[in-house]
Each structure stands twice: as structure tokens, then as C-alpha cells.
Amino acid sequence: MNSLAIAGLGTPELLIILAVVILLFGASKLPELARGSGRALRIFKAETKGLTDDDEMKTPEQRELDARQAELDAERDRLAREQQHRDDTTA
Image (cartoon, rainbow, N blue to C red; front, top):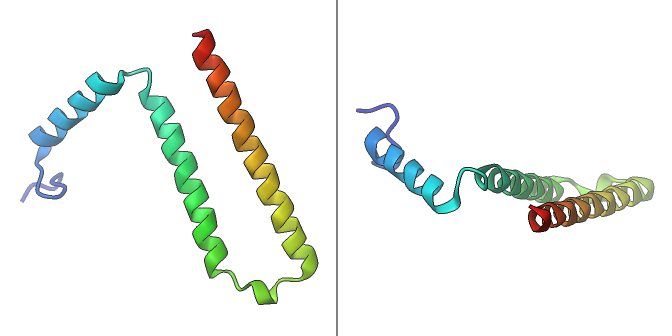
């Protein structure tokens, strides 16, 4: 059994898929795609962590701090998207 096999795909198949992805998106877009995926995973992780937290044990001050942090994170992400858009339009 090939140790690199994923979902029944061997190394040659995975290399072909990688080559197709690079041809479709271009090497310059891959870092942007990776950043977007990373952001999505961070948001997903934060949301799932929020579901597992016991909100009843939090003080009102802790809830307020969490809400402020979420607002700051959302604003930071919005500014990063705007900057990326500006960079894309000037390039």
C-alpha cells in the first residue's frame, strides 16, 4: 500500500491533480487561495470553539470582551480584504 495514497489516489494521480490546479489558478493565485483557506479555517475553529464554551460560566465582562474581540477580528478581516482588493486592482 502506498503511504501517500489519499482516498484511493496514488502519487501519480495526486501530481496530475496538483499540475491541473497550478494550470487553472496560476502560481501567483495559490498563496491567495491558501490565505483565504487559512482564514476560513480560523473562523470555523473560533466558531466551533464558541459552541463548546459554556457561556453560562462567563461573567458579563467576559462576554463583552469576547464581543469586542469578535468585532475587532471582523474589522481586521474586512480591512485585509479591502487591501487585497486594492492590490489586485493595481497589479
